[in-house]
Length: 392
Image (cartoon, rainbow, N blue to C red; front, side, top):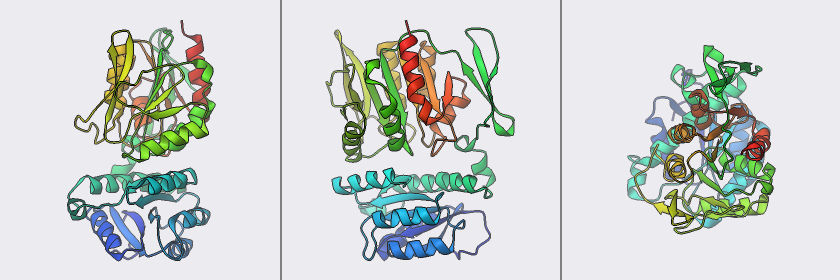
C-alpha cells in the first residue's frame, strides 16, 4: 500500500472492511493498475470517518463494506459525506437480498456505486471480471471526484468520453430543417449537435442507465405522468438480486408499477419492465402481441443486461415510434442502439453532464449528434412527456 503523501497522479483510494483478507485482496487488485493507489486500509466505519476528516481532498474514492463492528457502512455513510460532500463511495457486500436492499438504501443516501464482494477462488485470484469492474469504477469515479473539486486529472482520464464537460452556454441554431437544430458548445473545442425530434408519436419509452442510475430512475419516473400511457422498458446495469429490489423501489417511490421482465410478459401501456440481472431483455413481436424475451447471449459492452440489445429489439418491433432516454452511466452502452433508434426515425434524449454521476453513456450519445435534447435530470421527464403529447 502506497504512502498517502505520494506525489503521483494516481486515483487515491481508501478501503474499508473488517476483514484484513478482503482489504488485502482489494488492495492488491487495485494496485495492479498503475493509475490507482490505495492510501488507506481500515477495519471499520469510525476509523474511516476519522481518516477522511484528516485527508479531505486527498482521498478520491472509498470502497465501503456494509457489515462491520464499531460502526457499519450504512452508519458511516452520512458521516463520510458530511466530512467531504464530493467523495465518491462504492458500497461492497456479499450478494444477498438483504445486502442488496441495504446497498440501494445507501445509494439513495449518497453512495455512488455498488460492487459485490468476490466469493469464488477465481474471483479471489484477481484474474476476472470483478477486478476489471472494480478498477473501471474506481478510475471513473476518482476522475469525477477530482473534476468536482478542481483537482488535476491524468491526461488519459481527462480525455475520455466519460469526462467531457458541457459548458453552460445557450444552444445556437444551425442547419436546415430536418437536419440539426442546435449546437451546444463543449469545453476543449468539441461540440454537441442536436437534431430535430421525430414527429412520430412514440408507442414505447426505452430507458438505459448505469452508474448513478437508480437515483436518476427514481427522479425521472416520479416526474413522468402516467397519462402518457406508454409501456416503459428499462435496462439498468445491475447484478441479479439487485434488479428485483430496484423494481420494488420504483413501484414504491414512483407512480409507475414496475417488475423484472420475464419471458412472455406482455409489453403494455402503463407498465414498467426492468431487465433482470444476468439477462439481456428484448422485445419480440408474437402475432398481434409484443412480449418480453430474455437471453443469456454474451455480454455487450462488458454488460449483461446491456442497453444495446434492448434497443435493437425495440427498433425491430416499433420502427420509428420509439422514445429513448439515456441516463447517467459509465462507458458507451446504448450508443449503437440509440443510433439505430434515430436511423429508424425515432427520438433520443439524454441527461446532461452536470447532473450525471458519470457522463459516459449519455455523453456518448450526445457527442454522436443523435440527441434531440441534452437536459438536466429534473427537466427530462417533462420534456419526454411533451414529446409524447406532440406526436402524431
